[in-house]
Amino acid sequence: MSTLVVTQTRFDRALFVAGAWALALVWILPLAYAIWTAIHPSAYETRFVLLAPLTFENFTRAWNAAPFARYFLNTIMLVSMILAAQLILCIHAAFAFARLEFPGKNILFALVLVQLMVMPDILLVRNYATMAQLGLVDTILAIGLPYFASGFAIFLLRQTFKTIPKELDEAARVEGCSLIGLIWRVYVPLAKPTILAFALVSVSHHWNNFIWPLIITSSVETRPLTVGLSIFSTTDSGIEWSVITAATLITSGPLLIGFLLFQRQFVQSFMRAGIK
Amino acid sequence: MRREWIHAGLLLAPALVLLFAFTHLPAIQTVIDSFFSTARGRRPSVFVGLANYERLLGDAIFMRAMVNNAIYAAITIPVSIGLALAMALFVQRRIAGRAFLRMAYFTPTVLPLIAVANIWLFFFLPGFGLFEQLRSLIGLSPRNWVGSPDSALYAVMMVTIWNQAGFFMIFYLAALQTIPDSLREAAAIEGTPRWVFFRRVIWPLLMPTTLFLSVNATINAFRMIDHVFVMTQGGPNNASMLLLYYIYEQGFRFWDSAYAATLTVVMVVILAIVGIGQFFLMDRRVHYK
Image (cartoon, rainbow over all chains, first blue to last red; front, side, top):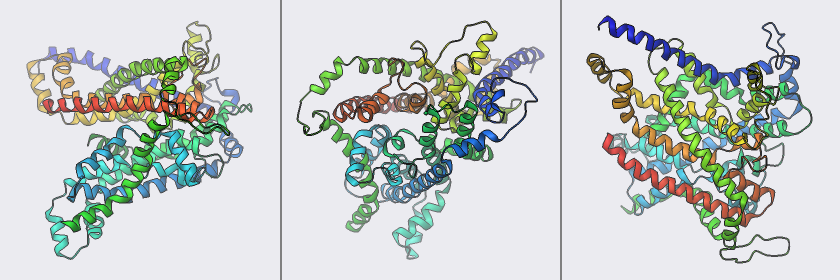
């Protein structure tokens, strides 16, 4: 390469790097500000002194001001219940769509795909009525039930199962493996990366989900973290901002820490789940 | 053959029953509900024909919500996608502090939208939040961003963009990885300027991803409204009213389920149009592959 090209691109390059950093700093600023507020006494909310005393008090005050422990438990029960149900239901359904022949297969699959557009999230009024009829209002089961049969999971797993060579099923059947055995001993282990990707997407989606849980829950025993946080921060009881930001960080903490620790897997999983 | 049908039926039944019970049937039932009145007290629900739809056309708040949603979509979609592309181009190759940059762009995506709204509310706090302090540094007067009708919707949009751009970046990163290095090398030997290379080679190759993200961003523009609950509650004076929030308000604040059903039908129709549009756009995608 000639020297002319090199000097031209060096200026370009500097501009490029500066742009990247400027955008990143702007992007991280709101979060950094929230962390600053949460770890300093409220007197330092807007005074940026480098040596401002650090404190953990905002976190303890937030933790004690609302039943966050219970909310955590509810959210953890919720996301694990949804994930388990989704995997059990959708792995079997995806296998049927990928490997079995039966009448009406294409129509049924098209109906599954409809859910990618018209998700339960917008059918709030009707689903609430259904839950009322079933007597499930204000239960954790009701928060999760509409999401158990995930069109996205069925679609994703079907695509993955289709790439598994058919010779493997024949071999397994010759060995006397049942259909369920074939699914769980051959197909599931081979689809592990996809399943992991889906699991991360599902957990983070339902950890963060808000409107449906807000509508269907009405007590501390069932409310997930997102709903608990919104109630905590919108009640006009003169709670200081530093305490609210601490509560905000508490609720997003596990996901945030999980993300920072497993950043690479997270990003790769989202990519994998999105592309197919 | 018959045995296979039975197996398929058994494997599919649980998933399909739940899918129909919470997606298809409620969608159909919603359409039916929209032709009836809401049952109130001792008055049962009666067939009212198109009365709910007539009310819709005369409802200024509904019109406001539709206009707001159109503005919301028209701004958040291109800005989020544009920023996502810039982010992906920034971090796709070796750059100083790459890991930090990628983390900074992506982290907002991991946070619950409801938590994000809290963070931004504080950021926007009149005369107090950081946004305001920065403005006062350059001598601008304090302003209530979230509380004033001119800016509430834009404040909500900023939060949406902040939350989703990093997520979209991931898809561009994945697409950029599939572009062979040989193209870049060939362009370098030819002395092609960076911008021309981007416009003539990279941008067309990224087209399928851009279409995919446009569809996603459109759905998000109608569905992602968690932050409205914390930031503005559709206000002030409906300045940040969005369709789904209005459905929530009619259905669960005023308990007018028939009218909420009518609004939901509008939402389903919009999403169906997006879905059909995607089908045709994705067809074109074949040409690029």
